[in-house]
Length: 145
Image 1 (cartoon, rainbow, N blue to C red):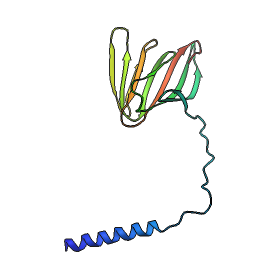
Image 2: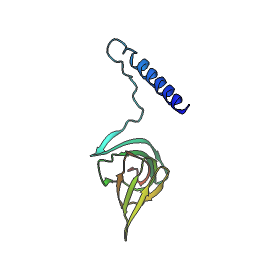
Image 3: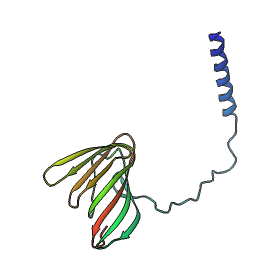
Image 4: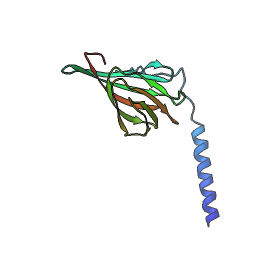
């Protein structure tokens, strides 16, 4: 009985594959979408792309919301900021290294992780396995996000 079920499943799978392979491609050249995103990513440096989502003026400071995409092919990508920032990991996993005044802190990154970087501290990010998507709210004095 088990042998008969296995044969039936194998024959059914073969029929589905054969039927799927027989559908012809539509004639003519492919038609691509003309969609253009409102806030496209642009290259920031080797292996890092960035886009500016919005900039909001505040009392004595500005808040810039930016998205970063870090490639897993670029180990320890340095992100430079014009002020203090709050980061959220939107997708992917990796590691962040923050060089603080007296110490170096390493943070394991996964989707949903939130961390802060103070003004003047350096941040290096490494993506593991897939691109790492980060959203940053950057607080800068004097309108320099």
